[in-house]
Image (cartoon, rainbow, N blue to C red; front, side, top):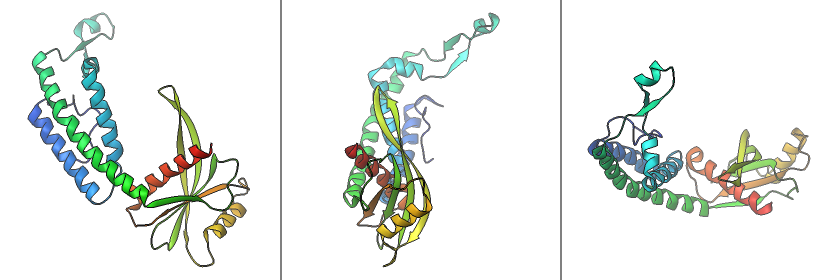
Length: 238
C-alpha cells in the first residue's frame, strides 16, 4: 500500500489494531519516500488526511456522516431514497475515537518531517526573472535547472484564479515545452529570445528561472516546489 484512500477511517474493518497496522504500513512508505528526498505525492496526502482528521475530531457529526449508507427496505417500498445509518453503536464510536487519537500525532510527525525537507529544498532554490519582466504576468515561461546545469526544462505557465473558503486563491497550470541543452551560446536569455520567436502570441512574456543549488529528485520534489515558488513570486508582483 502506498497511498491511503480518502475514506480509510471508515472503510473496511473498523478495529483499532487493524487500522494501526494499516497506518504503520502507510507511514513506512512515507518514511522511505522522504529518505529519498521525494516529497510528492505523500506530502500533499499527509496534509489532506491530517486536516480531515482534525475536522472529524472536532465535529463528531462529520464522523457519522462519513459512514456509508444503504437504502432501507421502507424506502424501497415507498420508491423513495431513504437512508439509514449503518452505524449507531457507541462501542464502535469509541473504537474510532481511539483510532483518531492514535492517527493524529502520527500524521503530524510525518507532516513535520515532510515540511522540514520541503523548507530545506526551497532554501536551496533561487527564483529570478530572465531579462525584463512583463506587466502581464498571468502567462509566461518557467525555466528549471539544477546541477550540473547541462540542461534546462522549459515550461509554459498560466495562472488560474479560483475561490476556496470565500478566498480567491492562485493556482498554476504548466505545460512542458522542451528540455534545452545548456551551452555557452545557449544562455537563459538566448533561450527566452528563441521562445519569443517561436511563440509569437506572447511577444513580451515574463520568464522566470528556478535554479537549484543541489540536485534533487526532479518530478517528485524539485518540479512541484518550483511551481510553488513561481506562484509566490507572481503573488508578490500582483
